[in-house]
Length: 123
Length: 110
Image 1: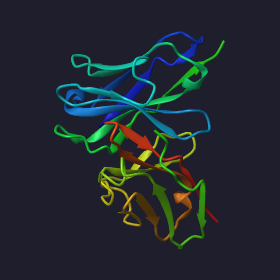
Image 2 (image 1 turned 60 degrees about the vertical axis):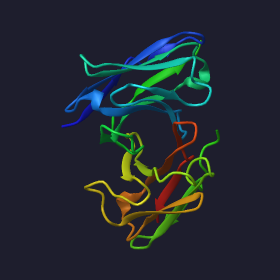
Image 3 (image 1 turned 180 degrees about the vertical axis):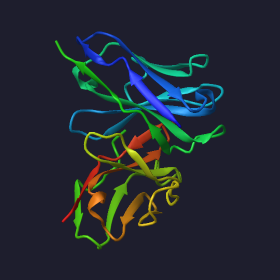
Image 4 (image 1 turned 90 degrees about the horizontal axis):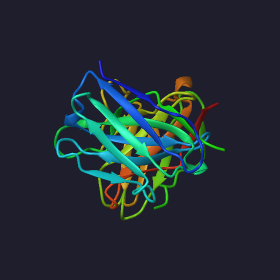
C-alpha cells in the first residue's frame, strides 16, 4: 500500500526556518516525481515544488525559489522541504504528493497524498 | 503567475449534472494536456479524479468526466450524489516548468 507521511510542521517565528519530511512507503521515491503542495487555512491549493524521478531536477513556484529547497534521501525513501526566511504568508498545511507515472516524464496528476503537516509562522 | 480561474461555487440536485469550468492561458491549459482535477472533502487530503484532461484513475466513478477546449478545461459530474459535495480543484502543468492550481469550486448537492 502506498503511504506518505509528512512531519516537521509546527510554530516558527517570522524569518525562521523549518524542514519538512515526507516518509514514503509502498513504493520507491526515486522512481517518481514528487511535489509539495500547500493550502493556507480556508484557502485553495498552491503548488510549491517538484523533484523529478531519477535525475532529481527541481523546480519551484513563483517567489519560492531561493527560500525553499526540495530534496530526497533515496536510502531513507524520504522527501524533504527546507524552508527558510519564513513569513506569515507561508502559514499553511503542507502536503507531499506523488505523480502517478513511474519513471519517465511526469503526468502532473498526483495520485497519492499525505495527510499534511501544518506550518504556522507567527511571532 | 495567477491561479487558474474557477467559479467559487456550483450546485445541483441529486441526479442532476453539473459542470465546473477552469480557465487558464496559452501558457498552461492551452498548451498542455496535463490537466487534472481533485476532490477535497473538509479536513481531508485532495483526491485525484481526472488526469490528462479526460482520464479517470481506477476507482473513480464514470459519473466524473473531463474535457478541454482552448484555454478552458471542464469537469462534469453526472447523476449527482450527496457524497459528491466537496471542493473541486483543477490543475495544469505550465510554462514555468511547474504546476498551477485553480482557486477551487465548492460543489453543493441541494
